[in-house]
Length: 141
Image (tube, rainbow, N blue to C red; front, side, top):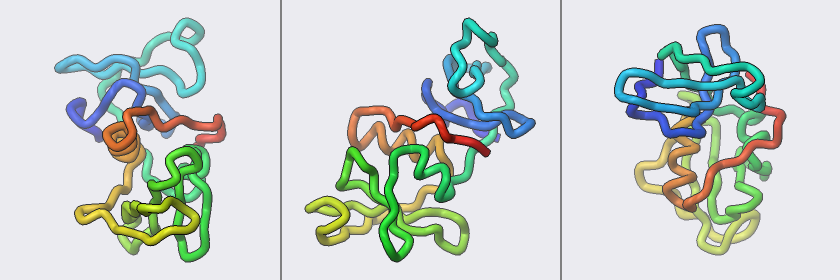
C-alpha cells in the first residue's frame, strides 16, 4: 500500500481490485481518487485509503510517452534527455540521463538511480522538468 506522504495530486495508482485511479485530493488521513480518464463529476470520488503502486513495465512506459531503443533502453519523447534502462532483475529501471539527448548522445547514469513504481516516476519527472508526466489513454493493468 502507498503512504499518503508518497503521493501527489495527479499520481496514478491502483485500487484493491486493480482498477486504475488518479489521485485528486490528499489530506493527513485520507486520499481521494477517481477512475483514471473519467471526470469525477461522472463517477464520483473514491475515498478509501488503500491505494497500491503500479509497477513499471514496457506497456506503462509506452503509455507515458516513452519510446524504445535497443538494449532495453526507453527515452521520453518530449524530454529527450531522460531515459530508463531495464527492467533489472528486481523489476526496477535504472534512471539514465544523456547530455546530448536520446537516441544519440553519451549516457550518464544517475547515481542513486532506480525506480520501479509509476507514482515515483511521476514525482521524479515533475522534480526534473516541472511538468506532469502525461498518458496517451492506453494505460491499463
